[in-house]
Length: 162
Image 1 (cartoon, one colour):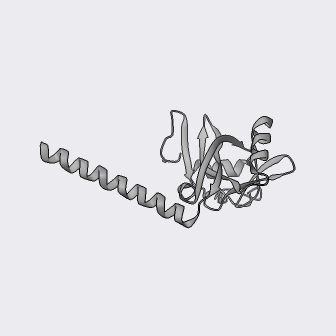
Image 2 (image 1 turned 45 degrees about the vertical axis):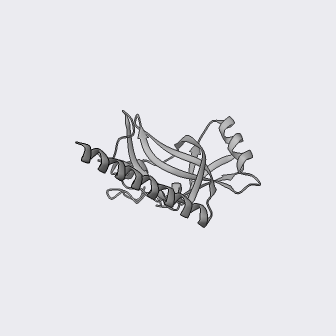
Image 3 (image 1 turned 90 degrees about the vertical axis):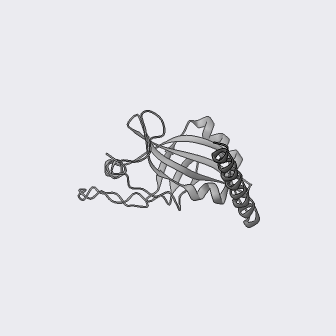
């Protein structure tokens, strides 16, 4: 079993896309199921996956996840999967329709944020996101740095008072 961080009771996080929160302004998040082959699930149970280059795209009226790397299962035979194959996202029709309308004709995209097991089933947290400009990224980094320095100064003052 993978020894990754637990999200909630019954949830085991396999992979996170921390770069997505840096590169995109997250507007809305959804939890989606993922249609996988058996060897993919076994590889995920070993705690191996990468969401870095992942994105979701509509083909017809279905949402597909592309660019996510799930390495081949080591003990797999000829039934093994392709590491970067296209995988179908499982959402309710109403959620798919909302996402489709929001993505069409805008600068928005759908990116995966995390991949995890929830009660034995593989789920992916996807987000409707807008790409950040370079100055937005610098502004966010500056805010984080200022917040860190303020917290550090406050903790130093608390230590001195003791």
